Length: 384
Ligand code: G3I
Image (tube, rainbow, N blue to C red; front, side):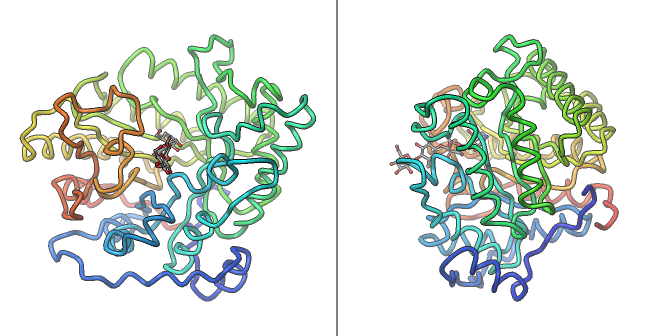
């Protein structure tokens, strides 16, 4: 699987099967709105080095924010639903009461615009429907997990490039010798839930890349180092057990100032350790909170841009890094700006955060130039 060409969804090829699978035909306007001449096309600069650059998106944005969607189409070669494919966002009420409408809209947009589509996420302890917890016993929970995987992955078979199969499975603070997170799926099914999830996803869509997606593995601190070791141990166990896995997702939710330092050398060595497993690496949720930066917009935008550049220079130096996804493209749509995050990321002066490459008016910020520089200076990846 490694080295698989990213599947750019041919408008013609999949439109029939793809959109048929997705239910109704989704006529999403091809994005033709004029773009500021001064904004680089990040997807083009990335593609010139064999990289994919993309961003999160939502059905709501596709249907109600055409100017933003036009920017996404110009700047991104990949989209990933920020929330629309999560279990609790597809099923809020009762078993079998799934609403795939928003997820179909996102998938249809990717197919319509010939973009790579990431699947996020199949199992995540944090967005599991409440009825799952009330199921009577192990067998019922296992059946529900199997049904979730077969239904979701089967629906987008041949359309999704890579799946975050289990999102955030580790938590060393929970005290298990294996460092796994003591959360709903582990408690219900034991550590074998990981093998079940990855094997069944592979069986359901043999061409999709299977990803373990994690956070707080980027910085130079004892906590991050412990998480890196635990993750590498998990990879070793999974590969030894013959459990299919193709890639590691490094979320990369960063801060311009404050928090642990970033050591390019240590991070680079960690990426090399992952690559030594024969895995590729996807930077899956990159953003840079400006929580502790000065109020002056020019100063903090520069600090945010410098953080993007330093991180990407180190990450892209590893040839196994094939993809960079920012967790949003514009400050107009950011979980940090919406404060859907713990308060530690919020600015203390009450000013809106500015974590993403484009501002809320869809204008490029210094971070666009910084990312463009990082892509331009990145070593070229072999095609495929
Ligand atoms: O849609 C409702 C809206 O109707 C309601 O008015 C509003 C206020 O209650 O809530 C809205 O739902 C919110 C949803 O995002 C859509 O904006 C949820 O409360 C909120 O909890 C949810 O937060 C998302 C979070 O994951 C939990 O799913 C963030 O947008 C999303 O950026 C964040 O993304 C995660 C990745 O999936 C995994 N890695 C970490 C990352 C950041 O936490």
